[in-house]
Length: 369
Image (cartoon, rainbow, N blue to C red; front, side):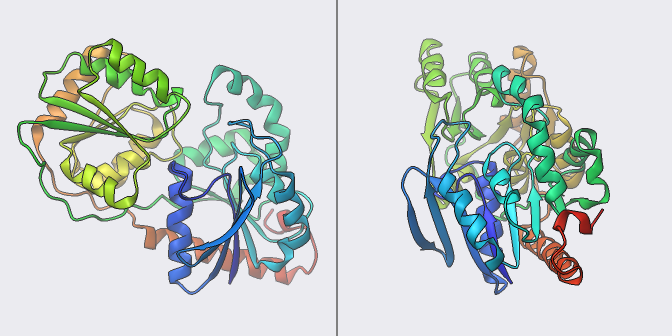
């Protein structure tokens, strides 16, 4: 099949959606599919990355949270019919709307849906955007959610999606893991885009209640980065909170291998990839008790060491982190792999393409209602 993946950003940009798209593309290429990524960037470019043709279109609106490329939309209007299936990602990005408008190609949509915005302002805009979001949902022949919790949110806000909403959990990458490099230093790993809703500031504050042998490794970039660095310095933690920024796979594997524990204090996630990757590596993990994290815990089973803690309770969070860092490596959790994700997603593509072919030129969204 020839697959067009429409995404807000692509590797080397990092984030949960970016990781999902990159791993999906790699698996599709390995399965023999022809894959193109249609995305947006500050500068136009076309390049092949690990067998994936990546088309980056220049931004018309460069605003961080509301990026839009009119050239990308024009490309899709003219060329969408060249793909057997278009697969758009992220309800929270305007590229998915571009994929839904102006063409009749079979459309699969993975919304990575949180049900709200990530700041008060963006949360206030969310109801205003919903009619446009409904356009994407109605246009999609299949809506792929990464947890049942996300599916419930989608059906709560877009009940017409109905049986077109399916669940394919995110995958994990099995990694060879060794013990921490220094037993005298207990390194706690916090991975994710540095945004307010990730609540990395709560984790940094909790570090003040842990002994000097504890170190926090923060991996990721984002708009809250400078504020978090100032917070750590102001609390006297500059040497114990290390901001690594963006890491390639090899550097991240090294960081993961030296960690004693992991933490995610996020207020909302569609899945919780940081938690899943930590558990798959056998890392004791502390996480917020949100539905997505609870679902990952269910997938991981009883053998995984996972403790839920409220980041607003600084004492409780610090105590959970201390226990996690002291427990030592556990048996890696058996979770879905990216090969599982690719296989299930290809089945969706095949079904969507067949349904579309069977009805000729009718609107794709109407096929599965």
